[in-house]
Length: 189
Image (cartoon, rainbow, N blue to C red; front, side):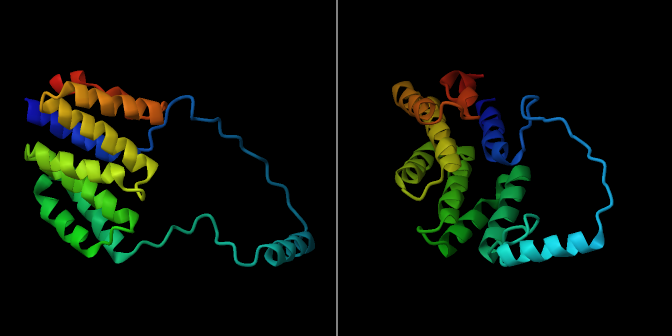
C-alpha cells in the first residue's frame, strides 16, 4: 500500500506543474468585443509604425525552440506517467546533459523518482540533496525537491529531518502548490 501511494504522490509531484491547475479565483470572465471596421489606410499606417518600433519582436504564439535532448526528456517524462520502465532513458539523457544546463537537474530529479519507486531511498536522498545545493536549480524544481526529500525522510522514519525540509519549503515558498504534501501524514495514508 505504501509503495502505491508513493507512486501516486510521484505522479502528482511530476504532473502538478503541467496540469494548468485553474482555481475559480484564477478564472476571469471572458469579455467579447464588438469588432468595427477600420479603414485600410489606418491599418497600414499603424502596422508600419509597429514594425518600425518592434522589428525583431517574436510573436507571442511562437513556441520556444526545444533542443533534441529536451524533446527526448519530455517524451521520457510522458512515458514515466504510464510506466516507470523509462528510467534507463533518464540515465542516458543525464549522460548527454551538462551540469550547467537546467535540463540536467530536471533529469536528475526524475532519476530520483525512479529510485523512490524502486524503494532505493538512500540513492534518491543523495541525488535530491545535490539538486537542492545546485545553484542552477529553478524555483519549481527546488519546491519539488524539498517536498520529495522530506517525504523520503518520512518513509525512512527520520521525521525530524523530514520536518526540517518541510519547514524550509514553507519558509521559502509560502504559497507553494506542494504545501499540502509537506508532511509525513501524507505518506502514512
